[in-house]
Length: 143
Length: 181
Figure 1 (cartoon, each protein chain N blue to C red):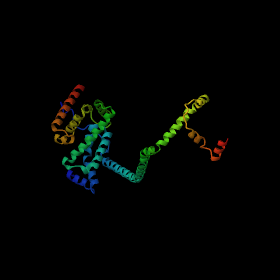
Figure 2: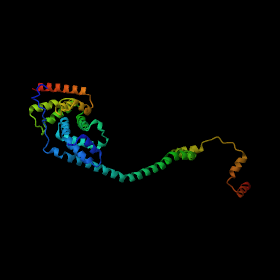
Figure 3: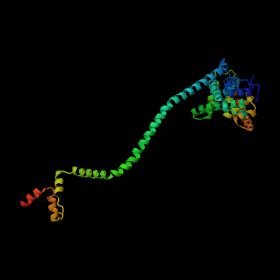
Figure 4: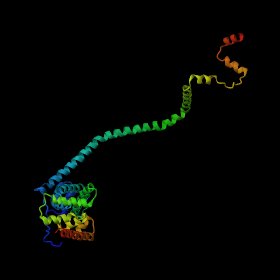
């Protein structure tokens, strides 16, 4: 420095009166407060741990049930009920188709000419008599 | 007066740990306080940092390895705590170095515990405007008369770099004082 005598090395700062007398006590108080807080935290953890353990086991049990039910069962049931659901779907589609028809269109659809199929006389006879008992068949033949 | 070895032995023994720690605080509180105060330039902040430093010492005393020396270890903790404090301040001020220097100069100007005259205030302001490392090195050498050998361990910097820092600091302070005369 250019002129050392001008700028003394004396400390120009001060502290509040009696500050240094209390430092030890305040630090000890702080350490004790922090330690008791951490002990309280540990106590709380010890109290909460069983509850957390129980909750965790419930969660695990739920997962063990929930996963197979949502992931495995749908694949299995899809295989067995596939055909049935397909049939239901077809019925629903037919119903929807006829639901939108007015009366005229419906009758037209009923009376529309379709190529008659060639039936053998035996087939026709068995079809006609399928819902008749023997007595009724006999009465029909007589008349 | 108790020496460093006796103090350490007391700190390592559970039955004497509390008394030895109180003795440690009594022995080093003033030196560490002034070291911190010159870095942060505010009594309340220095008080907080001093307490933090001793709490850290209490927590880590079992892991302390005596080869580095208790005195340098304590200075190192206090320096790191002070720099952490300033870095947090700097973050709040959007990371500008100039702003942290302005904050330190304001601390000197508004300090109710500043007892120096105008010349000393001007010198303190010049020191406050230095870069962080140069400021710490200058204070440790000029006011606390700490040897470069010890400073090396405290600041984890080579003696050559510390001497260069001190030299730069002196130059900058001289320039500032000349410009404000």
